[in-house]
Structures are given as structure tokens and as C-alpha cells.
Length: 144
Image (cartoon, rainbow, N blue to C red):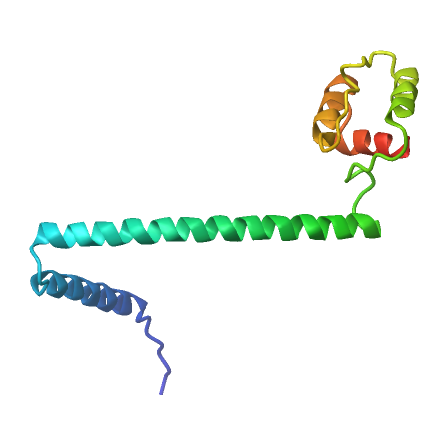
């Protein structure tokens, strides 16, 4: 006696589609309201829930972003990420500017303008002016 395995996936898919189609038709035929009113209610519900879904996704996105940043900071503090992954300016910025100007004559005061919380802008300007990668610029600034 030989064993023969049949592939029933096509039959199962066809049965599922037929069942879904029958359910949709029955739902439309037995709906308490006319088609336009039913479609309107479905549209209102979809709009309501899509707005709620959007708010939830936004909230979860913000939560994930803050958690991710926290994990990155922990990894940086432990020294597990590459050198120059986080800008940590310490000391007198005017002295650091002077050292940078000595090393790189092409840098201007405008290039080296820095305000607290605007490290990314400084790094971006130096990247463009020096033609270096972000990690190189961050490491350069951290080493000052």
C-alpha cells in the first residue's frame, strides 16, 4: 500500500473565500438600514477607529523613540558603541574653538558657533566644512 499525500491548500483557500463571500452577502441582505446608510456607518466607524489607531501608533512611536535613545545613551556610556557616536562637549568652548582654528585654518567663527542643545547643527557644519564623517567630527570634538 502506498502513501499518497494530497495538497488541500487550494481547496481550503477556495472554501475560505466562498465562506467570506457568503458572509458579506448575508450581512448586506440582512442589514437593518439601506445600503447608503450602512456604508455611511461603516465609513464613520472606520474614520473613528483610524483616528484612534493613528493616535496610538504615534504614542507608541514616541515611547519607542525615547526608549531607543535611552538604550543608545547607556551603550555609549558603557563604551559599547563606536568612538564618536555621541557629542560630549566639556570645558571651555572658546578654548576648544581656538584649538580647532589652529588645526583647521578654513574654519570660521560662524562654522564654530555653538549653543547648548544644538550640537547636531555644529557637527553638520563641521562635516560639510572638513569633509569628514559624523563619527569623525564627534570624536574630534569630544577629544578636545
